Length: 265
Image (cartoon, rainbow, N blue to C red; front, side, top):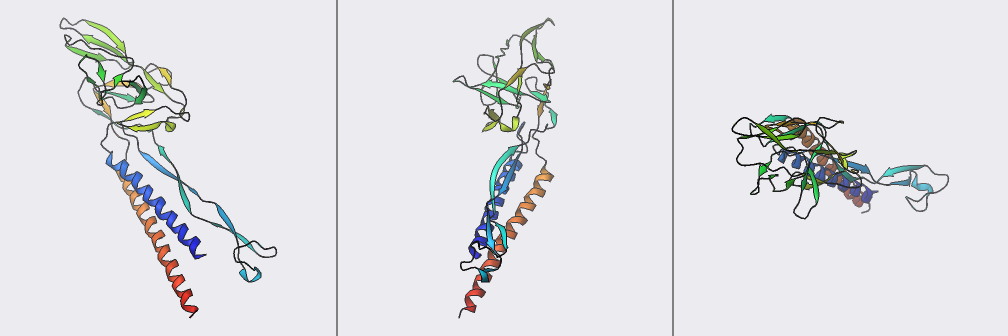
């Protein structure tokens, strides 16, 4: 009994330690552009059938007909971490190359090796060739090239990109497209505000901003993190209290074992 109780309490302590690590990561990224918070999910471990009246059983804990049987759990285990893709606040930056997605969708970006990744971080910049790239240097896909001779860039809510000349004329240079997934929670977080496709996320669905359930693009804005600091603080306190309770269980079991040993003397 004592060993089971110790293992159960230890599993609870480990689970809450992991929970605190997830919460800490959320809080650390509260100012990260377009960051999506995580939530730790847990499952109970397997149950054992235990004889409640061991006097009638030759081996305590073994099932014996005619005695009362109850199920006793063996603790908890981490199951997964789940991304929450709730919309973050849209904040103004006045930078014409900053764009935010209001609604569903991800920007497509391409690595040097041709791998396509996805992000909601629209803090784009120009590389040496005049192409729009992410802060990490990944090319926006499809590519958008801007002419340095232009006096301004105008990005419509439908993703159309136009250059404005000194004479006031505009001419289109491309269109920013978005992708969405049937299960965005199944995307693989890769760091650098990037996500990768997985079998759980489903195949990417390509479309234009503002159409077919895709979100709109807002120039001069960025999406903030969706971390609620008050909610995270409450979750942190709850996890801390749960950890303390499990540690007290360990101390209680130790005291019970000490008393049992003293009875044998």
